[in-house]
Length: 426
Image 1 (cartoon, rainbow, N blue to C red):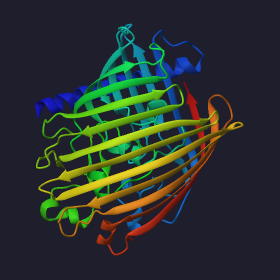
Image 2: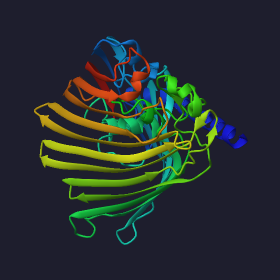
Image 3: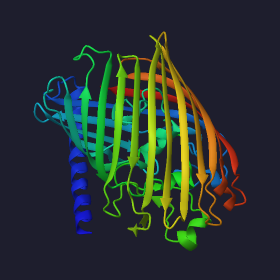
Image 4: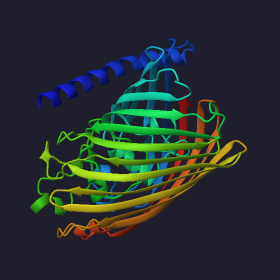
């Protein structure tokens, strides 16, 4: 308990230090002054007008305690996440990276989403070894490759990466070994990745009860993510479960792991396959949180179809369990995205599909669900730092546990239309 409190105190100190430096760094950048050698700063954000469909009482967004699976709660002016990425080369081989954000969902606050220290020595006979330690996402996504793990193609993320943004974060250490094709006069490049971690024991909580969602909100390290206060979590084997999850909690002191392989063919094709297992003990309850034994496999693919046309796709399937099979859930999701650069406008279209299969025998807590969604976006640059975009989303889902209240429809369609002003510098 003392170690956990000390870790939290040190993290809060780190966050305050980062906050203290941000105004100074931004002032230097905006005035045209050069950053210190080895210091890298980039940022992006958005503000826009949103039009949403009528919300019913139980179908407010999940961050307001409802069961809605799109992020907007009402029509009108809304702020999206404001993201910051800060990097610093400590030495020729060591560097530090911090990703922070300001968001207003579920509350207005600044926080840290990732922070790690990297080590990359000189190549040895063409092979490159690198490592990092801290809080970070494993490099599973080929969609979220922009500043501070945001999407390079749209404001919203796919259902897979929206879930990662909410619940997938841990403190860990990672090693990777790369064989670059150019050095070996080959069209093929390979990378092997392995990591160990702690602090992601509640992974699977929000996925089991709310299901997949589509949005662009990343949880900060240590932040709580809310969902609906279902009647089924107030009684019996689930009586101790609150209507929120703190995804980065360490509960059982077990060490999880992941392993991955990347393959790149020239600059046209790329595949990334990962297996992730948090090795949590599903019988542990601590700090008001259950540990969930969660594992999954992810396969991401990127293909340059034409000079101006790119395809990005990802498939996820996994399983999660909490308690003595109080919750036992398998899940699957996939998406396909096409991005077209036409004249000055970048167009993106994405189709998502997802499924949750409830395998436990707990009465009154049916977590079966399925759904699909479409996203269409266009972005037009105004200046190197500003752009206008429009994004339409439509999602239809069936979540069986919404029948716990009479006015929560099991089948429901959600849609929203966003007109956004985007800013960035990098």
